[in-house]
Image 1 (cartoon, one colour):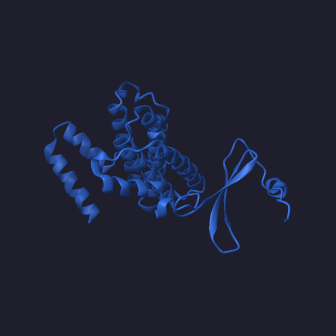
Image 2 (cartoon, rainbow, N blue to C red):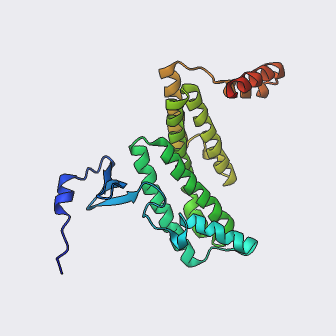
Image 3 (spheres, helix red, strand yellow):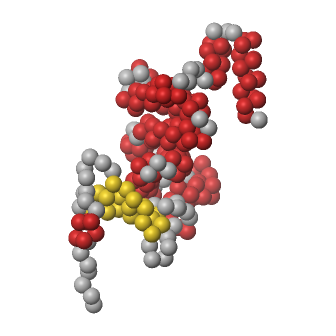
Length: 244
């Protein structure tokens, strides 16, 4: 029986830098691509498709998909048990690691996809867990996940649709964040929140860099707020033409 191999050479060739996130895509002997993240004292390898660890829990693409099928089978009586909660925790961590990898590599569509998976899993846990403490242990990170998703959506929109669409993606993300603050009766802290401030900075940077004033959606919101209904109707017509 051969002795296990040390990872010294691999780690030496890719040094760990605490101030930056080291991420790369590698190709195996079978031609399959994989993500690698350099961490202190090691390297994480994640699958690019499906669940990051490559597993198929109970034959499903993810543990969330398995839980969804169970909730359909048992209906309103379905409650997440302790073993399932542990598997949910694992899946949250795995998708977090892959999400930040995609952001580092500027693969924004995949970052959005993984953020949406995490948000859907959070929604499921909130609905089907009877352990409020466990649920809140995940819910506390919802603003952070929304922040990542908004960043990714804004930068993807900038590449595909231009600065106005990017700004609108930020506004949509800010609205989603505000809803979370309101749900947990923390709306008084919204304007002082660091994640909100960073999104506002990104929005204003886009306005200045691309010389963009208020978007049509923003003009429409202002017109409705000030009861300028004729202007609002014209703006809605203009938005409808753009969406055709």
